[in-house]
Every structure is written in structure tokens, then in C-alpha cells.
Length: 138
Image (cartoon, rainbow, N blue to C red; front, side, top):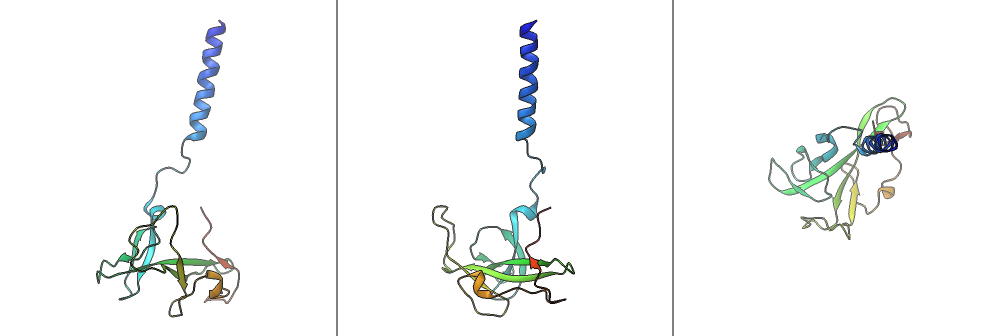
């Protein structure tokens, strides 16, 4: 009798542990893997892996695909392009996990700077609100 109770308790504990460790969000979607990009040479927009490297543009085939970040206005819900990101070394083709690359940031059409803070405050282009930021996770 004691062995049966102990086995039942062990099965329940094991089932609970599996339940807690199982991924709760389901499978990985392309949005989780790919990021929006813009080619700095021809302006073509495409999606590519999340690595912070300049990728080859599928249209002009130049290595000029910078990452694009979008913000959302918390007041009017407008989604807008906040800034671009590229490595300071344009020859970078892989990312070293020990020493990540130095990055530069740019508002569309503006100068490249070494810090997102140097871009200044972001405002919604539709309503002018400063209550903006990255989209909230779902």
C-alpha cells in the first residue's frame, strides 16, 4: 500500500514538474525570430534574423540591411518607426557572444550616433505625445 501511494505521489510531482517546464507560449513564430530591416543603400524593407549585423539586401544585394525599431504611442496607438541600428564596423558578418558589437543609432534621415539617448526624446508623429515606447509583449 505504501509503495502505491509513494508511486502515485511521484507521478503527480513529475507531472507537475513537466507542466511547469513546458513552454507556455507554444511554438516560435517568425516575428520572434526575424526583425524588420531597411537597406541603407536602396531603401528596400525586409525581415531578417535578429543578429545586429548588416545583412545583404535581397533587392540590391549590398550588405546594408540595418535593423529598424518601431515604437507605439500609448495615447493614440499609432505605430511609427523610431530608429535604425547598425554595427559601427560594417565588415561585421558574425556576432561574438563574448564581446557584442558596438552599435550606432539613427533617426531616419538623421546622423548616426553611438547611443539611443543621443537621439533625444521620442514623440508620436501623429498626436505629438511623449508617451511612446516599444510595443508591449503580448
